[in-house]
Structure formats: C-alpha cells, structure tokens
Length: 495
Image (cartoon, rainbow, N blue to C red; front, side, top):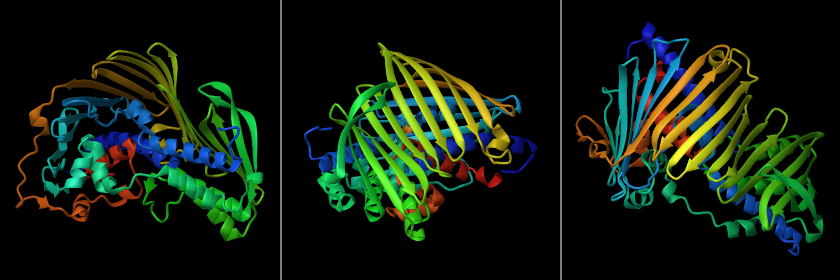
C-alpha cells in the first residue's frame, strides 16, 4: 500500500473511526476493573457476592450500547441459520470526497455450527480489500485483507469446537484465542465461603450494623435493608482484596503492569505504611442484593466505590463508579419500561478524561423496532491529544434506527467545532448464503498452517498486546477482530 495524498486523507478518516472505537473499547477495559433475621456477617457476605456475581454476568455486554450506537459495530447472534449484511458509510464535511464504506457480513449455520465473518473496506468506491474468517467444522481459516498476505489455518480440538459452536464468528474467534472453553465455571457458593473465611476473617457478627436506607432503583428511591461494617488497616486490606477478587472474577490474565483500582489502593497503603479505613455498606431490596458502597480513607485522602446491579424482567440498572482523586471512572446502564413495548435507555461513561452520555427511546412491537436517541461526548484532555486533536473537546449527535426482522436502516450524526460526521448503515437479514460461509481452498504451500498449535496461530496472527486482558466481552471481541483485520491490511503501518 503506497502512501499518497489521497491515502493520507483516507487514513485520517479511518483513524477517526479507529480512535472512536478504541475510546469505547478502552472505556470498557478501564472501567472494567436482605434478610432481616440473618446473621449480619453472613448477610453482608451474601450481598457482596450476589452483586459481584450479577456484575460478572454482565461483563460480556458492557460497552455494547455505545459501540453500536456511535459506530454501528456489533456481533452476530445465533438465532437460526442466516446471513446478515451491514453496510456502513462514514462521511464527513471536512473530507466530502472521501467516504469510507465498511460492508460487514455475518453468517451462521444452526445445523452444524459453522460461522463466518467478513469485512470489506472501500473509500470513494475504491476497494481497500476484504478480510474474512471462517469456522468450518474444526477448521479456522483467516483470509487477510491484504491479498499479498498468506492465508492462515488452524485446527481446533474437539472440546473447543463443541463448546464454541453456539456463538457467532467474532465472539468465537476471541474465545478461541483466549481459550475460554478451558475456563472453569465460577462456583459462587464456594466464593461466598472464601469471602467469609478470608475477607471477613478478623471480624465477628458484632462488627456489622443492620439498618435501612433509601437507594435509587430505576429512577425511584426504594427503601432497602443495609448491612455495614467499618474496618481499618489489615482488616481493610482483607476486605478490599476480597471485593477485588470477586468483581474481577471473570477477567483473568491481567497484564502484570495492569492492576485493578482496588489493588492500586492496597499497593499505596502497603508501600507508604499509611493508615486506611473503609466503611462498606451493602444494600438489598426485597431480598435481592442490589448495591455495594465503599467509603475509603487513606492517609487523609478519601475515595468512594459504588457497584450496583438490579434486574427485573426487561428492566435493568447497573452502575460501576469510582470516585477517586486522579483515578475516576463511571459506567451506568439502565433500561426502564415506559409503556407497552416502550423503553427508555440511558448509558453513561466517564473514564480517563472522556464523558459519554447516550439517551435512547425504543419502541418495539413484535419484530419491528423504532429507536431515537441523542448523545454527548466531552473531554478535558488537551487539544493536542490524539483524539481531541481530530474531534474537538465536545461532540453532540443523534441516533435513529428503524428495522423489521433485522432489515432496516440506522443513522448517527456527530458534530463538533472541528468535525461533522454522518454514519449511515443499511441492514439486511435473510436465509443462509452458502457462498458466504464456505471457506476458500487452503493451499499449504502458499499459506501458514498452524496445525493444532494455538501459540503458533497467535504468532501468525501477531495478536501481541490485544490479549493483555482476558475477558468475554462483545466490545473487546470486536476490537480484537477489527484490529486484526486492519493490521493485516497494512493500515496500521500508515498511522
């Protein structure tokens, strides 16, 4: 790929899309770190473990709302055999002659579990290439976007093939690379025992206080049963360590230099030989654990952690909040039913100096869907920052989607004082197209055959830093696949 003037403009537009997607993905990784007659110590443990368990269940979906709303990237489902095509056009008034078009095709065969995904990129009608991945039986075939790069083949073992056949190609790729099929399912009963025996080992029933307090659930204050405890020094370390272990249970293999906020708090305490005190309060509503709030004082500095999860039917509320000097982050996701088939959706993200608020109103009747929304993105980053130098420090926009049975259109507009971008997608869903799920013939003499060696596959794909965090999350899966595709197209070499 030669570097020229038109290519430079193309790259700027691609950079914008990559940075916006990376912003959302980074937010996910960044962020992602009742019983009135019960023994209060055990009730406290049940509430902490209960909220942690539910948060871990949601890890796969955290960040999917802003990713779909802002850049129209999403993963495939496995509801019957099908082929879905999403054609997305990115256009900007700052470079009107250079529209970027991404055509993504997702295919799934419910009869045998085969799956495929391909993405074609073009600018002003000039193709940049097509990248594809196929799962056919126990074979994984990767076709790079750059036609000069070799195809790659890998053979999954039978257990991986069986456990992954019920997920789409994008998620399957991420799970295969991270060996998610070998991950043992968390025994939350055992985690409850472990939490009592370790995190609460130095505490007795008398250390815990039962009470009642209000907590906002789905926009309304509800009276909740609370259990709280105040601990200091070693007992504080045990408690915050126990909470950290539970909250990050489904996120494994963190890079040795990438620790959670809780661990950084503990490191600060131990390294400085300081004083630490924690008051942790758990909330339960009608017998269901809903929230954990920890107020921490470390050497006269204070910070607050709030972890909340509540779900009833189609309504849901989730909050992960860290209010700490120089290390703030916030994630909120809520779905409130406002009428028959009508929902109000709120998504807020605050991380590393970026603030995203998305408000959407959805009207769903049978297989038809109408969605209207607005959003704001602001930043306190300097204007020289990689993202704000292109987007500016404040962006607003609208979202609109109309679809029936997966067929329809979706539009997003983004505006700032530096750029205006329109994103328009057409979506089609129909019967499985055999040619879209059948891999090309692999020729060993011109390709890379990794056999059954997963490490050889990772080396051939050059996964590198994309695997610093190991977690089952749709946005993280998308990021891995998207980075793989553009890396193999040589686009990253131009950045």
